[in-house]
Image (tube, rainbow, N blue to C red; front, side):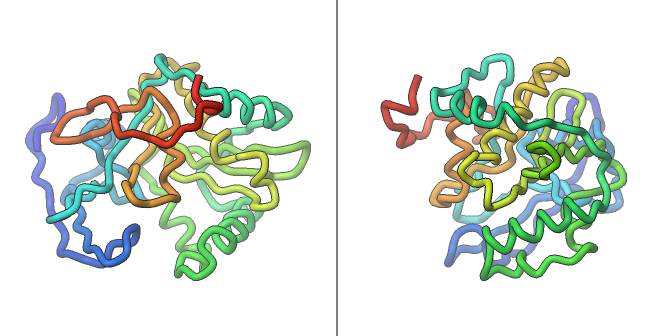
Length: 248
Protein backbone atom coordinates (compact mmCIF):
# COMPACT_ATOMS: atom_id res chain seq x y z
CA UNK A 1 0.00 0.00 0.00
CA UNK A 2 1.22 3.53 -0.84
CA UNK A 3 0.04 6.22 1.56
CA UNK A 4 -0.03 9.81 0.25
CA UNK A 5 3.40 11.40 0.57
CA UNK A 6 4.90 8.39 2.33
CA UNK A 7 6.88 5.29 1.55
CA UNK A 8 5.21 2.02 0.74
CA UNK A 9 3.61 0.28 3.70
CA UNK A 10 3.12 -3.46 3.82
CA UNK A 11 -0.21 -4.64 5.24
CA UNK A 12 -1.05 -7.88 7.02
CA UNK A 13 -4.24 -9.94 6.69
CA UNK A 14 -5.56 -11.89 9.66
CA UNK A 15 -6.76 -15.47 9.59
CA UNK A 16 -10.53 -15.98 9.25
CA UNK A 17 -12.53 -15.61 12.45
CA UNK A 18 -16.19 -15.53 13.44
CA UNK A 19 -17.85 -12.34 12.25
CA UNK A 20 -19.03 -10.19 15.15
CA UNK A 21 -21.64 -8.40 13.00
CA UNK A 22 -23.38 -10.98 10.83
CA UNK A 23 -24.31 -14.46 12.03
CA UNK A 24 -22.90 -17.42 10.18
CA UNK A 25 -20.10 -15.51 8.46
CA UNK A 26 -16.35 -15.23 8.83
CA UNK A 27 -14.31 -12.05 8.74
CA UNK A 28 -10.72 -11.11 8.07
CA UNK A 29 -8.90 -7.95 9.09
CA UNK A 30 -6.35 -5.91 7.15
CA UNK A 31 -3.90 -3.99 9.33
CA UNK A 32 -0.45 -2.34 9.25
CA UNK A 33 2.54 -4.09 10.87
CA UNK A 34 2.46 -3.68 14.67
CA UNK A 35 6.12 -2.58 14.63
CA UNK A 36 5.35 0.46 12.45
CA UNK A 37 4.90 3.51 14.74
CA UNK A 38 1.43 4.93 14.26
CA UNK A 39 0.79 8.69 14.33
CA UNK A 40 -2.09 11.02 13.36
CA UNK A 41 -0.73 11.65 9.84
CA UNK A 42 -0.40 7.94 9.03
CA UNK A 43 -3.76 7.27 10.66
CA UNK A 44 -5.28 9.97 8.43
CA UNK A 45 -3.74 8.39 5.32
CA UNK A 46 -5.19 5.02 6.33
CA UNK A 47 -8.58 6.57 7.15
CA UNK A 48 -8.60 7.86 3.58
CA UNK A 49 -8.29 4.21 2.53
CA UNK A 50 -11.25 3.13 4.65
CA UNK A 51 -9.44 2.14 7.85
CA UNK A 52 -10.82 2.49 11.38
CA UNK A 53 -9.30 2.66 14.87
CA UNK A 54 -10.08 0.39 17.82
CA UNK A 55 -7.73 1.00 20.71
CA UNK A 56 -4.26 1.28 19.23
CA UNK A 57 -5.14 -0.90 16.23
CA UNK A 58 -5.99 0.62 12.85
CA UNK A 59 -7.77 -1.83 10.59
CA UNK A 60 -10.18 -2.49 7.74
CA UNK A 61 -12.31 -5.55 7.09
CA UNK A 62 -11.11 -7.51 4.05
CA UNK A 63 -13.18 -10.67 3.92
CA UNK A 64 -12.92 -13.48 1.37
CA UNK A 65 -16.54 -13.75 0.29
CA UNK A 66 -18.30 -10.77 1.86
CA UNK A 67 -18.12 -7.00 1.36
CA UNK A 68 -20.92 -5.99 3.72
CA UNK A 69 -18.67 -3.75 5.88
CA UNK A 70 -18.45 -0.46 3.99
CA UNK A 71 -16.32 2.45 5.27
CA UNK A 72 -18.31 5.69 5.12
CA UNK A 73 -17.68 9.40 5.70
CA UNK A 74 -19.66 12.64 5.58
CA UNK A 75 -18.34 15.62 3.54
CA UNK A 76 -19.24 18.16 6.21
CA UNK A 77 -19.44 21.23 3.96
CA UNK A 78 -22.09 19.52 1.84
CA UNK A 79 -24.16 18.00 4.64
CA UNK A 80 -27.83 18.98 4.74
CA UNK A 81 -29.85 17.72 7.73
CA UNK A 82 -33.12 15.99 7.02
CA UNK A 83 -36.32 17.11 8.66
CA UNK A 84 -36.15 14.43 11.33
CA UNK A 85 -32.53 15.37 12.08
CA UNK A 86 -33.49 19.01 12.46
CA UNK A 87 -36.08 17.90 14.99
CA UNK A 88 -33.45 15.89 16.87
CA UNK A 89 -31.18 18.93 16.94
CA UNK A 90 -33.99 21.09 18.32
CA UNK A 91 -34.92 18.44 20.89
CA UNK A 92 -31.37 18.46 22.26
CA UNK A 93 -30.73 22.20 22.21
CA UNK A 94 -30.69 22.25 26.01
CA UNK A 95 -27.59 20.04 26.15
CA UNK A 96 -24.19 21.51 26.93
CA UNK A 97 -21.04 20.01 25.43
CA UNK A 98 -17.63 19.90 27.08
CA UNK A 99 -14.42 18.43 25.68
CA UNK A 100 -12.55 16.17 28.10
CA UNK A 101 -9.16 14.50 27.65
CA UNK A 102 -9.06 10.82 26.76
CA UNK A 103 -8.69 8.74 29.89
CA UNK A 104 -10.56 7.08 32.70
CA UNK A 105 -13.44 8.94 34.32
CA UNK A 106 -15.69 7.02 36.71
CA UNK A 107 -18.89 8.85 35.68
CA UNK A 108 -18.23 8.19 31.99
CA UNK A 109 -17.31 4.58 32.72
CA UNK A 110 -20.53 3.93 34.65
CA UNK A 111 -22.57 5.43 31.80
CA UNK A 112 -20.70 3.18 29.35
CA UNK A 113 -21.59 0.15 31.48
CA UNK A 114 -25.29 1.05 31.59
CA UNK A 115 -25.30 1.60 27.84
CA UNK A 116 -23.75 -1.80 27.10
CA UNK A 117 -26.09 -3.59 29.50
CA UNK A 118 -29.01 -2.11 27.59
CA UNK A 119 -27.58 -2.35 24.07
CA UNK A 120 -25.74 -5.69 24.26
CA UNK A 121 -27.23 -7.53 27.28
CA UNK A 122 -26.31 -11.01 26.05
CA UNK A 123 -22.92 -10.07 24.61
CA UNK A 124 -19.46 -10.39 26.08
CA UNK A 125 -19.26 -6.61 25.62
CA UNK A 126 -21.58 -6.18 28.61
CA UNK A 127 -18.90 -7.60 30.93
CA UNK A 128 -16.89 -4.42 30.91
CA UNK A 129 -13.77 -3.71 32.97
CA UNK A 130 -11.73 -0.54 33.29
CA UNK A 131 -8.87 -2.12 31.32
CA UNK A 132 -11.10 -3.27 28.44
CA UNK A 133 -12.80 0.11 28.35
CA UNK A 134 -9.52 1.96 27.99
CA UNK A 135 -8.06 -0.60 25.57
CA UNK A 136 -11.05 -0.08 23.28
CA UNK A 137 -11.33 3.71 23.31
CA UNK A 138 -7.90 5.17 24.09
CA UNK A 139 -4.40 4.98 22.64
CA UNK A 140 -1.28 7.00 23.33
CA UNK A 141 -0.48 8.15 19.78
CA UNK A 142 -3.88 9.58 18.85
CA UNK A 143 -5.47 13.00 19.45
CA UNK A 144 -8.64 11.68 21.09
CA UNK A 145 -11.27 13.61 23.04
CA UNK A 146 -14.28 12.54 25.08
CA UNK A 147 -17.09 15.01 24.42
CA UNK A 148 -19.58 15.07 27.28
CA UNK A 149 -23.20 15.99 26.57
CA UNK A 150 -25.05 17.14 29.69
CA UNK A 151 -28.56 18.22 30.56
CA UNK A 152 -27.87 20.59 33.44
CA UNK A 153 -25.52 18.41 35.53
CA UNK A 154 -26.76 15.04 34.23
CA UNK A 155 -24.37 13.19 31.90
CA UNK A 156 -26.54 12.13 28.94
CA UNK A 157 -23.97 10.96 26.38
CA UNK A 158 -20.27 10.75 25.55
CA UNK A 159 -18.86 10.90 22.02
CA UNK A 160 -15.34 9.53 21.72
CA UNK A 161 -13.79 11.37 18.79
CA UNK A 162 -10.37 11.35 17.10
CA UNK A 163 -9.07 14.52 15.49
CA UNK A 164 -7.16 13.92 12.25
CA UNK A 165 -5.43 16.48 10.02
CA UNK A 166 -8.36 16.47 7.55
CA UNK A 167 -11.32 15.31 9.61
CA UNK A 168 -12.88 13.95 12.77
CA UNK A 169 -13.41 10.24 13.29
CA UNK A 170 -16.41 9.16 15.36
CA UNK A 171 -14.90 6.29 17.33
CA UNK A 172 -17.82 5.42 19.61
CA UNK A 173 -20.80 7.10 21.25
CA UNK A 174 -22.58 5.83 24.34
CA UNK A 175 -25.53 7.35 26.17
CA UNK A 176 -28.01 6.90 28.98
CA UNK A 177 -30.66 4.42 27.77
CA UNK A 178 -33.26 6.34 29.77
CA UNK A 179 -32.70 9.26 27.38
CA UNK A 180 -33.18 7.25 24.19
CA UNK A 181 -36.23 9.33 23.22
CA UNK A 182 -33.89 12.29 22.77
CA UNK A 183 -31.96 10.37 20.06
CA UNK A 184 -28.61 11.25 21.65
CA UNK A 185 -26.67 9.04 19.24
CA UNK A 186 -28.03 10.92 16.22
CA UNK A 187 -27.47 14.24 17.96
CA UNK A 188 -23.84 13.34 18.69
CA UNK A 189 -23.19 12.74 14.98
CA UNK A 190 -24.92 15.99 14.02
CA UNK A 191 -22.81 17.81 16.59
CA UNK A 192 -19.59 16.21 15.33
CA UNK A 193 -20.45 17.22 11.75
CA UNK A 194 -20.92 20.81 12.91
CA UNK A 195 -17.73 20.68 14.99
CA UNK A 196 -15.68 19.36 12.06
CA UNK A 197 -16.99 22.20 9.91
CA UNK A 198 -16.21 24.73 12.64
CA UNK A 199 -12.63 23.44 12.80
CA UNK A 200 -12.22 23.77 9.03
CA UNK A 201 -12.00 20.02 8.49
CA UNK A 202 -13.38 18.19 5.46
CA UNK A 203 -14.75 14.91 6.79
CA UNK A 204 -16.52 13.12 9.57
CA UNK A 205 -15.52 9.46 9.36
CA UNK A 206 -18.32 7.21 10.63
CA UNK A 207 -16.53 3.86 10.51
CA UNK A 208 -18.39 1.00 8.86
CA UNK A 209 -21.91 0.80 7.54
CA UNK A 210 -22.87 -2.86 7.40
CA UNK A 211 -25.49 -4.12 4.99
CA UNK A 212 -27.85 -6.45 6.85
CA UNK A 213 -27.11 -5.02 10.30
CA UNK A 214 -30.10 -3.06 11.69
CA UNK A 215 -27.91 -1.47 14.37
CA UNK A 216 -25.85 0.21 11.64
CA UNK A 217 -28.80 1.42 9.55
CA UNK A 218 -28.86 4.88 11.18
CA UNK A 219 -25.49 5.79 9.62
CA UNK A 220 -26.95 5.83 6.11
CA UNK A 221 -29.31 8.67 7.04
CA UNK A 222 -26.58 11.35 7.01
CA UNK A 223 -26.44 12.66 3.45
CA UNK A 224 -24.59 13.27 1.28
CA UNK A 225 -22.48 10.32 2.27
CA UNK A 226 -19.43 8.72 0.70
CA UNK A 227 -18.58 5.01 0.74
CA UNK A 228 -15.16 3.44 0.16
CA UNK A 229 -15.67 0.76 -2.47
CA UNK A 230 -13.32 -0.82 -5.00
CA UNK A 231 -10.40 1.30 -3.86
CA UNK A 232 -12.09 4.72 -4.09
CA UNK A 233 -14.56 6.96 -2.29
CA UNK A 234 -17.87 7.09 -4.13
CA UNK A 235 -21.31 8.51 -3.48
CA UNK A 236 -23.25 6.25 -1.17
CA UNK A 237 -26.01 5.05 -3.46
CA UNK A 238 -27.78 2.15 -1.78
CA UNK A 239 -31.53 2.61 -1.58
CA UNK A 240 -32.69 3.44 1.92
CA UNK A 241 -36.15 3.23 3.45
CA UNK A 242 -36.71 6.86 4.32
CA UNK A 243 -40.30 7.90 4.65
CA UNK A 244 -41.60 10.96 2.89
CA UNK A 245 -41.75 12.69 6.26
CA UNK A 246 -38.06 12.10 6.90
CA UNK A 247 -36.88 13.36 3.51
CA UNK A 248 -36.34 17.02 2.75
